[in-house]
Amino acid sequence: MLDSAGQALSQAPLRRLPAQQRSMVRVQRMLDACAELLDEVGYDELSTTRIAERANVAIGSVYQFFPDKKAITQALGLRYLDMFSTRVTDRLSRGGFSHWSEAVDVIIDEYLDMHRHVPGFRSLHFGDAVDIRLFDPNNDNNQVIAARLRDLLISIAGVEESAELDRAITVAVESADAVLKLAFRREPEGDQHLIDETKLLLRSYLSRHFA
Image 1 (cartoon, one colour):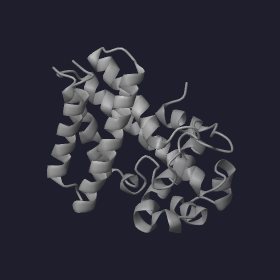
Image 2 (cartoon, helix red, strand yellow):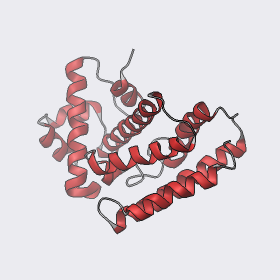
Image 3 (cartoon, one colour):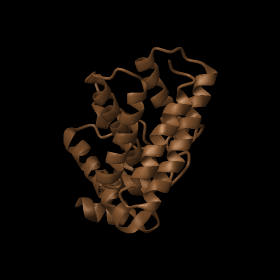
């Protein structure tokens, strides 16, 4: 059975999956290097050569697993997506939530914490800085995120799946994405007033669909 790191890699456009633990460690070092370099030089100046040097691996090792830098950033974006889902699920599984709206706060707070503290996340986010369809050629990145959050909220609120709910979650994700990006353009750590307004916006809008 694949662990969370292996599951993320299984969805990425690798030339081959790392079969041994030492190969997995080497690939994870490449992703760590990619994250650091995204914050330092940005995607345009990112290169497989720089990633190899930072990860202290031969350039041939990079190409053994990845065809190009976009594939590496896609694997990194999938790592972030799994990390975000796991963090939110772990917080919610601890219990102590009396209302679905508290889950909205958890989702926003975990996103904010990753933006502030996880290397590379503020530069890549969930891939939109590189390709709006980095995760899935048939759906944009926010649609992929919306699907995961929909499943989480359904499990908490106990509502039934529907096309109307899907549209509502999509609108909520797109709205939150836009306002939170504005919050971080205003302040390096995020404008707290805009963050609070984002939470209020989501609670008010989604209250039509969750009891």
